[in-house]
Amino acid sequence: MSTRPLISVVDDDESVRESLPDLLKEFGFDTQAFASAADFLSSDWVGRTNCLILDVAMPGMTGPDLQRELTLRRQEIPIVFITAHRDDHVRPRLLEQGAVECLFKPFTETDLLAALNTALRVS
Amino acid sequence: MQDVRDNTADLLERLKRAEEALHLSRIGSFSWRVATDEITWSEQLYRIFEFDPQLTVTIELIGSRVHPEDIPSLNDIIDRARNAVGDFQFEHRLLMPDQSVKYLHLTAHGTRNEDSELEYIGAVQDVTRRQSSEEALGKARSELAHVARVMSLGALTASIAHEVNQPLSGIITNASTCMRMLEADPPNIDGARETVRRTIRDGHRAADVITRLRALFSRKEAVTEQLDLNEATREVIALSLSELQANRIILRAELANDLPHVTGDRVQLQQVILNLLRNASDAMSSVDNRPRQLLIRTKSDGNGAVRLSVHDTGVGLEAESIPKLFDAFYTTKSNGMGIGLSVSRSIIEKHQGSLWATPNDGPGATFSFSIPHVTDASANAGANHERAARQAL
Image (cartoon, rainbow over all chains, first blue to last red; front, top):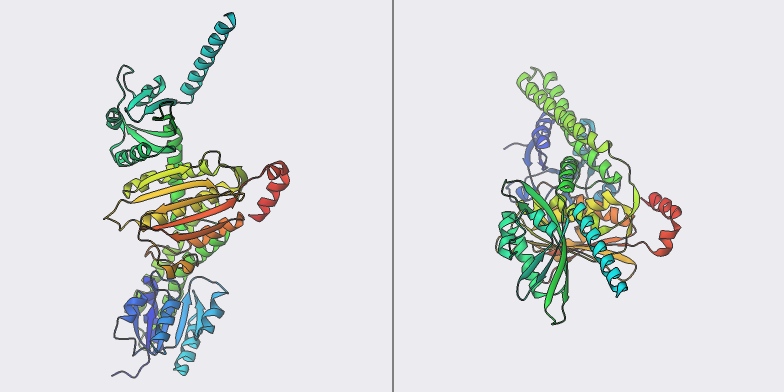
């Protein structure tokens, strides 16, 4: 049983699902990647996830939809949103709803690491 | 007596000239007595269909020339015409014996004759040449439409940012990982090589986005003019016809006569209409147990505005999803960015109008927009009005 924190990535963009887990492993985390919110919810990893890196805009259930669903299920997983749409109105709204951070793609590894450290302190 | 002869000669002369004018504009005329199916054609219409003028015109004869893919919509329109008096318009193709295709635009007006029998008189225009140039235009546009289904400056920026930021994100993440793999002791060369491969791929992906976007930047700025929404709609229909037919969609257009003009950007409004048509088409793509019918309708709404609505028999709307429909990034499609409707709404709002969605009583949904039409006063205001509208856009 690994004691490394598990970071789950939910993003419909394949290149994110390929690249981000490798970087997270380099940071020293365990990681799982999912192509949709539904895939994540139906997986066995929900209860084991220490932090969720979540894309905002996805077909079907969006990132904020998943955030609400997790709140309803009382799954208190710290969320770091990532989005390729730099919309300054979106960020405060997401933070207000309890997200730890909202990073605009492309983000630096320094910003990502800082957000993950905050998230893991919260959990 | 002399007067009558003069008048008759004058009338004949005028008829002859009218016939010549119709001939020049490639317009044929017809009448159709519904009860008996008696059909009369002008010479020009025989020429358009390339039938011997001695032939008696029947619906079967017409059907033998109509493009097989357009037969269902022809039957549909005939059924409707039989059951109700009204005006109808119909765009369809002919498949000629030499396999060439002609594009026709048909307009008909229904009346009751003195015996209160239903009769239609109408005109048929051969728009093949216009269609060909529109097809060329359509091909050019579809490339752009692929990047962003509809374009306005704000949406364009959002679309560019999104399309470019995705691969950039991959590039930066992969490069960061690569750096860490190389700095490890011992360095992870195989891992680094894989991240570099992905970096190159994402770099190409970003370059591809730029190539596609270059076409967008060459586009002209918004142009404001007084325009006929019916005409703009017909052009969009002509552009979409083959796509709709490929999706086995029966399109019906009910465009109000004497629709007042509106002021706006023709291309932007056409992109809204195109977006609504495509959404309707997409909404019906999974429907197999009922006809895929799309009704596009224009009318004057009596409050100084004209309204265009697109009615489909698709999967419909869930009540809870309606408020979210117009949010940017809300999408029910796996290949959509979810900006189409939000952009459409912003375009319509810039035209001082509104765009909304309603579930149908039966299956499907209706999306409508209304925009103010040009009043006599504003038409007279001319330059000022146009300047104001340009600023608004």
